[in-house]
Image (cartoon, rainbow, N blue to C red):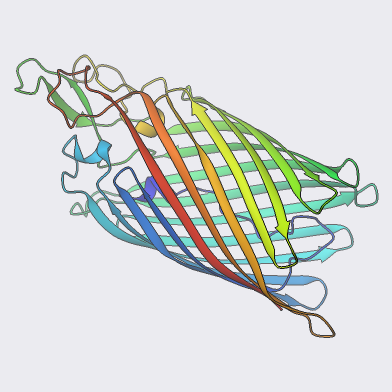
Length: 378
């Protein structure tokens, strides 16, 4: 079941980055590919934005994920020993309304796969103040998911998600922009994977351990705050930095640091370099190996709830192959981005060995992400 990778509540609200300006009319076509940890995801995406008069902008999107997975935490505990494959299709629509220095935005999306359905509605408002040097934004998102299970039609669970956002962007100097954002998310319902198992010590078993289903709390509250900065250099280049802190009532604390540099070359080329580092602590009810069956009220062996770190670079290049000026300007670019991430886990072990329980080597893997897309402004 690939829903844990992409059944996130919050899709991007189709709001302009700065209030007081509608999003540009454009068409984006994308192909994305992910390969790492026994999971492969790829598919196309299309996004269209079109203005209606001077105050309204409409958008529509279509997104497909084709997923094949034999991830280690699924195949090694017998939940799906041969892995699985599935396809997720997502549709979205949005509207932005501009009134003076205020932008009102609403976005809706729905996605479906063979064992998971999700529907999300987002609202946002942003306001320019102090002559446009400061932008204040607020947002709310609501999601409703239906969780199923392949070959188990009687299994049906629900998840409700609510998110609240605040943000401020400040032009400090003509070259420096700062942004501060806060997000609070409340989830309720069936929050774990119906296929995943935990393992526990059992001396009577030949492998010295057996498995049982995960058991999660039915609620989760999280908070995240992020600080971003971008500084434009004299020769049209720019450097950027971001720090994000995340915490939740499951006991997870996470830190993300990212640094970037964008460099133009001649008039048509733009190169993008970034490096990202992420680290988190484990959830209170996570364990790679429990001492016995039903050892506690809540049980998890999802590696994404363990203690781990990831880091890696992103390299991107953009080429402007059409830039027509005049009464009917037209611009188009082709863009290629590649990410490479290295994951290492402090308390999640690789069971694909014959070592004694709890002494198996710690798990690590690398992942590659590619995005190729063409953008047309009209």
